[in-house]
Length: 109
Image (cartoon, rainbow, N blue to C red; front, side):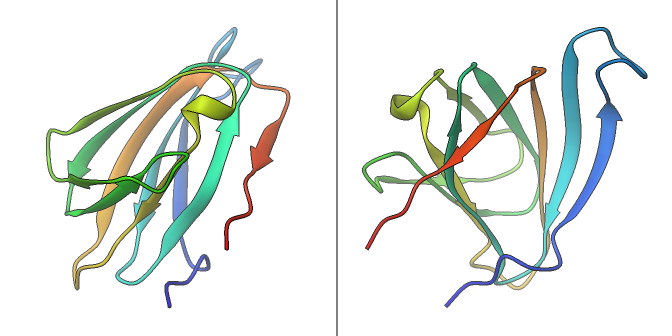
């Protein structure tokens, strides 16, 4: 079972500090870790900087990700996404989206 702990995030743009309205960061998922399925009320882009893993959409459909992969997530529930590092090396994801008021976590059996 994958873990959600020990993920590292480096903020690159913070609304009101280094940007007027963008939130951007660099997320490193250590081996065996994941970001659980969630969505935002805005669009989001993710770029895989290094490492390999799996992205899942709202329905749990898997897409292998690797360096250079770009993932677009629509606003709302239909843009729900999850990442899992199922390898033995770190997976690094650059994420960029407008400042968002809320993230909604999706529960799945």
